[in-house]
Length: 401
Ligand SMILES: *Cc1c(COP(=O)(O)O)cnc(C)c1O
Ligand code: SF4
Image 1 (cartoon, rainbow, N blue to C red):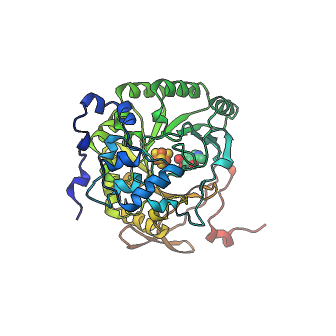
Image 2: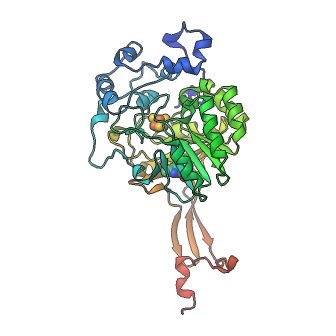
Image 3: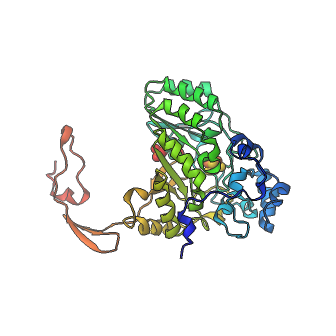
């Protein structure tokens, strides 16, 4: 049975920060300044296991820093060594075990960089890495090599060169700001960047990828929302992996963004011991749509070095999708994807619902496993004078030559 509180948007307890004033607690800069980042600071508030202590003294020093705003730190259940919040943000020694098939840059972003910080892989859209800082660091981060400032590489960003590239490439109609986390910029800095992007006429939409509404909901101030709404159409994708991250504070922060007219999506990563069961995912996705966020992608964990302990087999991921599709609101079900290693882009992974094909007869399986036959007699479209290629099974019937 699921504990009933997973569905509830609960306020986060203050715990050992109980004596902090409301003004400080609700100030996002106070939250950032007071992040525990060292073994001593973390251990003072959380009993660590031997592997976590080594993770903090080794992985967090050489690979990816550890940091959590007090607000998010308090979501960790100190009594539960398997706490799903803890697994996402507290380093472990296993992070230093690199499997042969794991990589530093699993998505091949560096090779598609057209200007420092700007990744142009798809025909009509770009990924713009604008900063290497986040409010907290996810232990499976695909950009561990460049975020947090302790990894093997430094992120170089050249705003002038990137903007010049965008001005010179009219095919780019969609710019995705990510990093690191663009919502860690001050309002003024982010506004200046958005204004310069909006001056480029062929950029139709701007998107922000951010986990700040989840790690640091205090950042989502009315002033930020008023600033952002000047730049519509502006979309935001957040990153939530477990229903407990959707607290009362997060629901209210997401509500302010939704009220500013910003359509929101969510990207989750399928993680062992965090969200690799159908019930947790269903509650997560249903809670997201209650917070007006549409589940967008569920990522297979990238082959980032030192993440074997968090990875779930693809077959299990597909099975989980089968347990969701049809069993809940259609738009609560995200697309399961894997980022093609080396730079293939997102590749959908789906359960197979077409069981067999025999001439015009398609044998389909529904969400309950029942079989249905569909007669596929329609002719291919010849709109625009360009007939679409006929389905494979009709080829023999087409006139030859
Ligand atoms: C994910 C990604 C995008 C955006 O992809 P969508 O499927 O449109 O969300 C764009 N560029 C790069 C390099 C990406 O990794
Ligand atoms: S918020 Fe995003 S960029 Fe930052 S550490 Fe987490 S996954 Fe990486």
